[in-house]
Length: 113
Length: 113
Image (cartoon, rainbow over all chains, first blue to last red; front, side, top):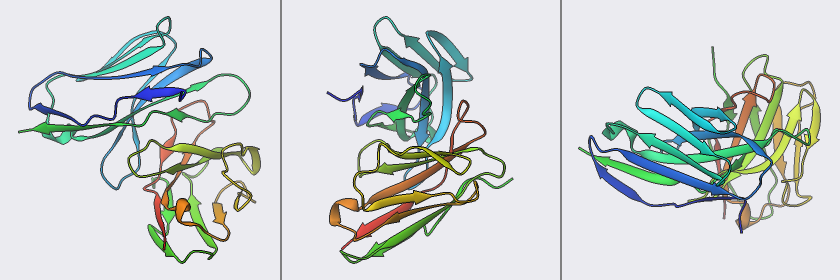
């Protein structure tokens, strides 16, 4: 079992839909949770960065972390064709001195006009 | 300012050839990471530097992989005697201090034929 599980999709939605993306994880030491967006043939870019449990909102994006369930989510409201990309969850712990990120497989999202 | 720059963008190597991949991090960033991203997968951690010190190399898949950052700025990932399974996108990321956002480069796409 991988440390971080993410459904690879693909996920196809109409423009304006609410999108829900999720990851589960097994390492209870993870404290920092991130969502990256990756366009084709580009590097990942950070969308949301959350420490510990709770919600964080930024424009059309909301990140949720439920540490008790080891489950994180990203919601995209009023989705746009420009949101079409692969969304990667990533997380790391705060121990051990290494700042490495552990990524999910990524979910490929297509928003159709 | 400029982001993380990687070169070359694309590299085709014959099996058994040695390759060197370069990463220019954002100026002043202390932490530098290398990740390997296979097709359809999330990035996998390879190694991590804080300044010139290689603090974690637990992700390097074999002793054919070697990374250095001699002056705490530019980093090179070297792969000796390349194999077909080394074909992937190699991503470099830098961070001001390892505890905050990591900025990714565009990656180097390595194809071993």
